Length: 319
Image (cartoon, rainbow, N blue to C red; front, side, top):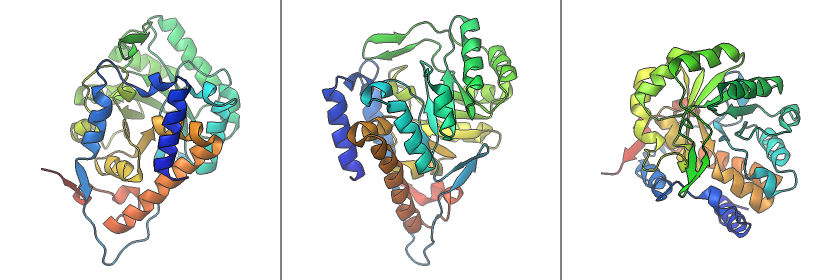
């Protein structure tokens, strides 16, 4: 099954199961279409003569990946899509040489997910009850995760359409980020950064990485896409911290555009759901495999030997 068929079938099944809400966006829904418009603004500059044989493997914060493509943070509605949804995703991503990232609520089987051997990241929300937040961080680390994430963009809660779906949070201060850093022994990733100011504060707090993301269009309407803020963030902190981009990335071509703008890794959210809904565990594996194949084909045509060789010079911006 190709990517187009996976996406079409997966969305059809999810909306048929009344999970369409998770595919939609905050308030007007502007961000979902806007993300696609930004990604479509760039085309590739081909180099056919003296071509290269690309290699997609990479090592990020001591994690070996078959390609710079990972799962974006989410938990719901994966357990409801298949009987063993989270385990299916974990095993598929392990087989694909990728990384799994779960959100909140923290899965009850987090230790079992880690035991599959898949590189695993879990997020904590900035709960207004800070004791609850630190208990969540402790629970995550005790499960044996690879990295820990903190949702820096969820301080005012999240929304889908006009419904508030996470209202028990409060914005983090720089000092609180520093306190979190002291309490996390593995790599710490700040999720939801969209400005130079916040990026610099994450570096000051001692974070190891950040996700440049509009939270899957579930926080604030009319947010920018990651590519629109990458330049200012790369200029400020690009040599000090690992940059991960997500938001609307669907194809191998999209991933390469993220890399060209300075990301080390690109996250996939809704595509994971589509793959799981369409074909189960095999669908998630196929998704990563097909995107990697697309990347290799395009890289061979633009002269990029590996992910670090993908540059802005390989893109042409539409006027």
